[in-house]
Length: 92
Image (cartoon, rainbow, N blue to C red; front, side, top):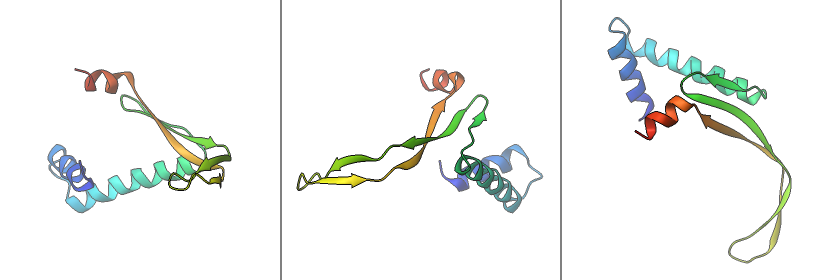
């Protein structure tokens, strides 16, 4: 599903809403979620799942072609944990 599909779904659900308004709402929600996770906060969307930042430590990796060791800096990634409802729906 692409962004345009989500905007279209919002329009179908709320018939009075224009596509530009639905897109603006979707962008605003996404921007707030990105900002919140970037600030180190956990986001819980009930019935969907949780997003939270997860720190990765510095480590030594290996170049798959040459086998040479290489230094991998510490980084932060996002962990998504689906809700029970979402997991149940996917396994039906």
